Image (tube, rainbow, N blue to C red; front, side, top):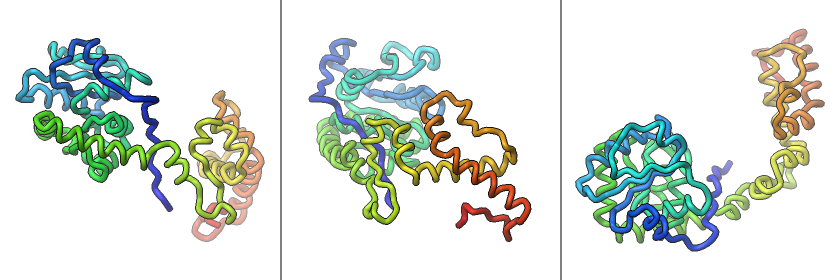
Length: 288
């Protein structure tokens, strides 16, 4: 078994943050950026407290995310509030920052942090899960305990006070991110070493390009996996109602229904047989 990270799509071309800084009048100020959703798990309120205690009063904080205006208290003129950013503007923000703060809890991967490293911008992340672990491996930033405003403030201040040193570390880490997590690199890792032994050769990039619906239709092994998942659901429901996906309008569910309807018919038959002739320990054919 191999653990494969998410693909990180690099910017389409060279990225400069100068235009972003000029657009918002941030040309001379040390700048911290946050990009992401505004929810309690993301610890944006911790970031605001950390920012307020920074010793450098020239520093500015750019917060970009959904519902920024509605979800945060009044926090002064040094904080720039922006909506969620997409595509080129997203990378412009990350490149414009001197450091990107990504302090959310339970970040299994943390796409924004690695996009920042691709732009040569150092990061400060929470160290409680995969994002902090990967930043520790790749370099280019610091990790802190989630929810600790004092620790986060100290880490941000350290990066800002050694900007050139951390910028070089981020550039080096960005090259490692590109090598390890580019779409092509991740796609190559999703192919089993021996597809001729009954495995499905998964082309992750191809799935993204051609659609999950077609992928499920073309691979019987994958249909069987989803059919097995349905078995657990049917064991609880104990009814002959049509699969829920018949009423689900999304194309993925339709594809799963089309691929698994035959397997589900067999599953329901097996459930009835199991009720009549229970297995020792209550096991089902899933264990076979």
